[in-house]
Length: 636
Image 1 (cartoon, rainbow, N blue to C red):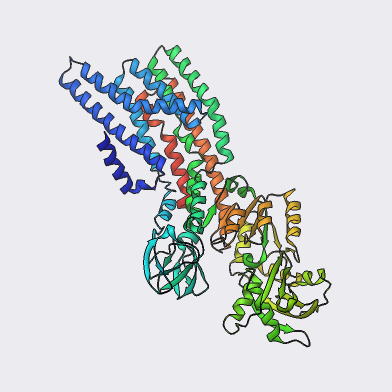
Image 2: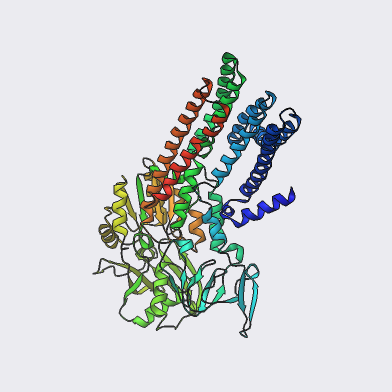
């Protein structure tokens, strides 16, 4: 037996079946081994019966072995489900009662064939056309177990990726999988991030670029400084989240579980009444066999697995059941501006010093402060200065003030403020708010309570923002808001370009929360942001979607759905996917229930035999699987 089991274990691990979870693999091995033993015993028993008709003892023993091998696991599953209140397990109890009745009624062949057919159905369901698990297992195969570490002397050493620590340097050559999260310190290359972000276009990495575990270096050699340990990489967290999402359940699953609590007593009653009035135990057995609703167990899980597969391929990470329960009924969408409907790559358009100060002085102070911040404004300053300006002042401390800017202590104990007009006003600083260009954002710099100048930044609307807003309206969502901390004129200009007429500008984070809470009173609100500055808003909304969450732990943790890329067209896509998934679940409910009651009716009136019922009772399951598969094949 051990050799047989080992043989099938190896075959399972080497075939497409290895996409299953470990628990499913274990059950599949049991089903395959027991099935082969049962088929072997049944065949020998039939041959022996026809060859030696007057000696039934040997066939009886062989049938009993097949009955025990196939039937006992089903009986244990049924009893376990009964005690654990597991509806799926309780279904096996109906078949267990039927095959026990067959056995003691002398119908040994049927007592063996019924559980055999049920196991074949289980195998086909596990390897169904849905195939959502290959996404997760495909990602697992992209984990690199080794890395080439390089020391200060330039010596290269092959080490386990799990042993790498932040600060160590590794070298990644063309064609290699990046083993861990890090930042490029030398070299350039194009990186394939499609498996994690869904983006088909390669990402170009150069010094200071962040790179992520399990992405592929397409060309060029880069040296990377490790920033996270192996188990703490963005890839590891995304993978863990995907595995968790396999167990997503929805409200429809709860409805089905309640239905099954009444269904089992109903079936037993129908079987008992049918058997009593027909005076035929075979009718009783047939009703039990026909009633086992395999399709009920797949009503919600099959569509969810299909949706997970479709979404993951587009770089959409679905974390919980809000995907179905609330996203499909969203009627209000709230967008952040920077990095959401705009490209998010702010650029310095102009530097305007106040009288008595120079542009060089202004840039020097801004660059010194921006080095310690990851805010889009700070990144824009650093990018503006990195090619031709490296002079940096000493900064003793910095303090980010949400929605306003940064307060810093410079050399010689000079206090500097770098932020918007709210920061200036809050500190009683006089500043010039006269800006001719309404398409720019403004940040001011004040030194020892005196405004010394301002920087103008520009950001462009995403090419697909207007199209995505229009798609949302086609999905029936007319309440679309733009909430931003930017000044009114710029916010209204961006809103008009995107097709959003409900614009709220110059907001602090607490102002955004207040607006979302107000909207939630009468609406189902979806909030979309970058997941860093918008974490409170994402959490407060009925559903939160984080854009560009690749590499951002805050984005993954604060949102219900995380987009690994910055494709705004994924917003209407995932809403449409949730609506289609919900429709499929309701269709599956109807199909599964109708098939079960038709089968029970036919069995109760003696119109089909137990063997035919054992074959036909899986019809509902396969209809559910095929219907659910439409989510994958009809994905837009």
